[in-house]
Image 1 (cartoon, one colour):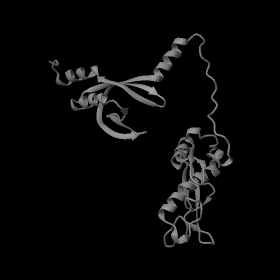
Image 2 (cartoon, helix red, strand yellow):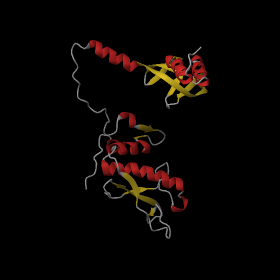
Image 3 (cartoon, one colour):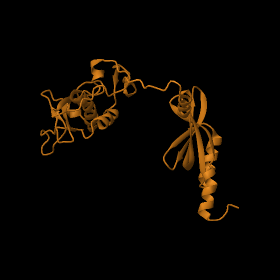
Image 4 (cartoon, helix red, strand yellow):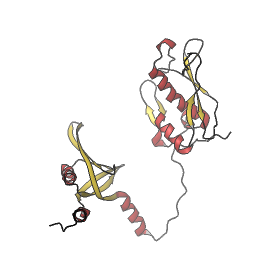
Length: 254
């Protein structure tokens, strides 16, 4: 049986830090499952059912002291079944929970935590966190660039910093007020019918978008990259709006 090797898959941005009395780095269960879907398609987690709750099968197996554990394994796309990995049902202090106090929330939380543990044991996924190995960006081979193609390089940088979405049809505009560092702000969220969301702090942008929505017109949205976010710099009526009006009526727009 060939099992995927997922060592080295996680990146620094996938790692979160847990605070409190027990500080630790971790990758959340949702990211774990998404990465496995991406790099090992068809592999899904499952649990070994317990016969101790007859006539119904349950998730929990029980140790001699009355505490519980789950047995989690993986099914492959070709019918592969991996060895089950035990994972104790624990509270948020990593202490075993007595049988009579175990809730459905405890079981569901323990399952997703156990999935992450079994992914490390089975695929090597995020093993670096368990082994305390520093996670760094994957090394990428250097791309050879033309020595005299300065104009092309500048153009690519400019394209990455600014963009314009043309002929956008507006679905809705939402307003949210919030306070930060003692200052009050209002953020406007503009959503297109294509599902693209635009964020702006300028009321004028929201007004143009609202007017376009009411008349079922189109707008052009200009954006600029600031840090990791795309910020709206301007919204204006799209030339396609008048053309659309003429096409739909069959008459000149006057």
